Length: 391
Image (cartoon, rainbow, N blue to C red; front, side):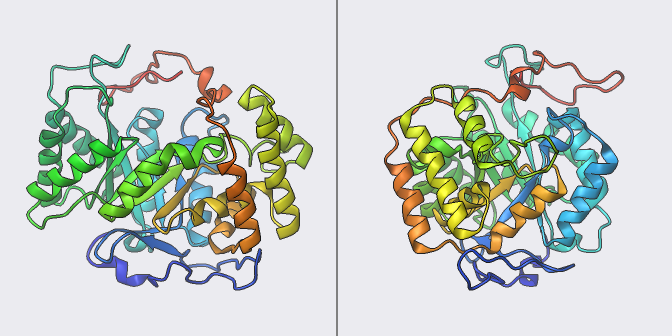
């Protein structure tokens, strides 16, 4: 989003929200979703964004026409934040997103975020040319620009947490990209609070206008969200950064279908799938899922909507990145931006999370675990930059 496009939005966190508990207000064409802003001079994003990974990667079938239709439908429903990455589909996802958004009449209101992944020799199986971190950053941004052919409003960077890359050197390179107008704002992905602080301080030092980090993207899985991200949330609030959270549904609460794509699953199926995904069917897990289902019935919502709506109440700077790939599930998710959970519902869900014991990492989703590693690009398509190993 450039040239003061933020002014096109109502800056209220609850703009357009239905006053009744559990109620939703469906946006008509050209009506933007409520948005969130961590500081008055910071980036403004739709409270719920559309993560486009599943349109080009991991989840079959991948049909470009259907993907384009979904994105256009999202815009009609008020979506103004789209997230992609240079590695999804070996660059195909960026090309798809760029093609849909580039000439759209509402492009000036839309924030397009992409990410760069720096994978060095410490990423087993990755392709690592003899380049330094800053050189890779400049190369990655240039190639993303080539594929998108439209402004990069937010550029999030990821690299191995234990790598020797200099945070200060990388932020200096990103400050140069900001100055040149190649990117509109800078974010990080899945970094520790100490790295976030170093990167924010360095970016402010090197940017002519003292611009700091705009956002931090992190996984926010259902069963370990509160404890795992407490320090990250506090750091983002302190520094005035948005916190972009993905995978709150454990890669499948909403999509755990009874058979028809996009169909909302029955309560028994939700419980069975989640407990199967978590491995051990512990009493604590069952209690948590049961609370979500009970609250959903009482609030006239789906369990997925309860969890998503609750996630948005954790902090006012939280933005939910949805990976919905079907119209029905996308509509259900976007409705969450205008859902108000009752105080009692929020309290019950929070208490359910707080009571959880320390839990292990989620097992990988079957779609990810089954992905071949190392990945190879489609015939005739070059590897644009170092690629991670998925699996």
